[in-house]
Image (tube, rainbow, N blue to C red; front, side):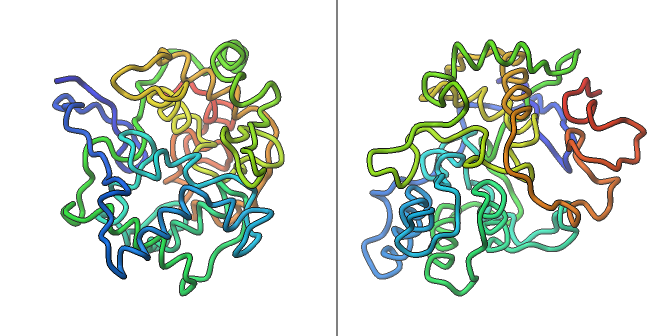
Amino acid sequence: MTAIWVVRNDKPELQPDFDTANCWTGAGVNQIPVDEQGLQIRYGRNLIENTAYYLGPRGTVAKISNGMNCQNCHLEAGTKPWGNNYGAVASTYPKFRERSGTIETIEKRVNDCLERSLNGKPLENNSREMQAIVAYIRWLGEGIPKGTKPKGSGIMQLPFLPRAADPGKGKVVYTTQCEKCHGRNGEGQANADAKGYTYPPLWGNNSYNNGAGLYRISRFAGYVKNNMPNPVNYHTPQLTDAEAWDVAAFVNSQPRPSKDLGKDWPDISKKPFDHPFGPYTDGKDELQHKYGPWK
């Protein structure tokens, strides 16, 4: 048994009775049923794995995203423990989200990713592609009781540092651990047909915009701690907590596309501790909200 930090209502809490051996792992492609419903589920998984092929700048269905795949952020088609997976989506949606101040559906959540992480445009809810993605996510969540979140779902919240996250130290981590795959300038590596990325861009015009979840340093730090350098997992992390925080600070200090966030967090008192854009109600400035230290 180990202690682990989790986030509830955007506030970190220490959970002392967490057993990492019992983390949720999503079903694999070979478990998809061989019937008409299975065809839709399989197409949904293909869209997650190969989003750029279908919806990227040279997409075969539509040209509405930046060339990244959903799988670049939701690892192993959204099935990897602590890999920003979909384990809790079907069981917790629809739900009220403070960011929009509304009750959101799975469709809304998918489109948020398209507009923020893929810096693109939304799909119609009744489109074949949206219905397939939702069918896949719901299938992954079968058997998870409504209103519950399985262990290992989403991204792990790391303990806070006693100091601010340091982009300068993070640059050293990036150069030694990340540059060989993601490029000196964060440009990533395109795949063989140039319709997607083997290693996604981490900044620049083709990366996620400043409204994406991974633009919050805590989200990026927890993500890389348990997944990078690929194929690291939560059993065998290679980065220390401090290195994860610092490389997150470095990457999210680099230029990237911007999104109009004027409608986000209508109740500003509900903003997460590391949301980097004011106004706030706690008297702290944007710099401390972005990099810390947080208490």
